[in-house]
Length: 69
Image 1 (tube, helix red, strand yellow):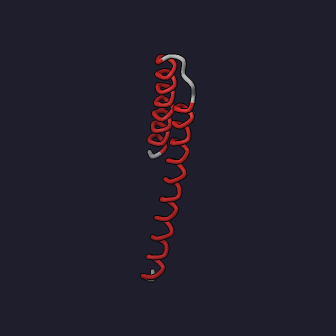
Image 2 (cartoon, rainbow, N blue to C red):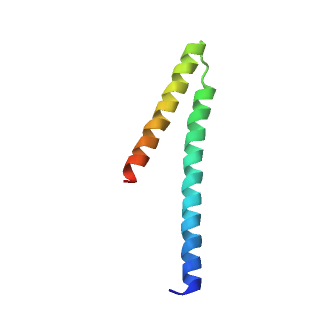
């Protein structure tokens, strides 16, 4: 293959990965901001929301790790 083509493909893949990572981080940041924006009456309700958030992230991580096999 031509060196220029290889470099172009590599740059395109890197840009696509960067865009996907950016979108992912924006999604989880917004989810966390939603939790922080709630008016929790008690510490327990905040803890519940944070635990739910962590559980969602863990589930997604397991899903992604499982699909790599």
